[in-house]
Amino acid sequence: MKEYANLIASKGSIAINGTSLTPVDVTENSFTVSVVTYTMEHTTLSEKETGSPVNIEFDILAKYVARHIRHKP
Image (cartoon, rainbow, N blue to C red; front, side, top):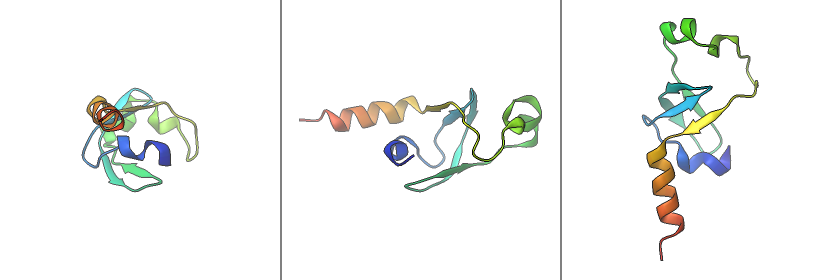
């Protein structure tokens, strides 16, 4: 998680298993999201247990900014 921390912004965007969510609390080692009842009822997120593997897609803007900073002369 630590290597991806720069790609997660509080109140930004992140997709977990294809479901777009908003990170609420972001630390160096973790992040939390709030999931509304509708989302839990209409996605597969409710089937996941703590520690289950998931696919995470980071905000594209965060990726562009990180890339720009890495390649800045």
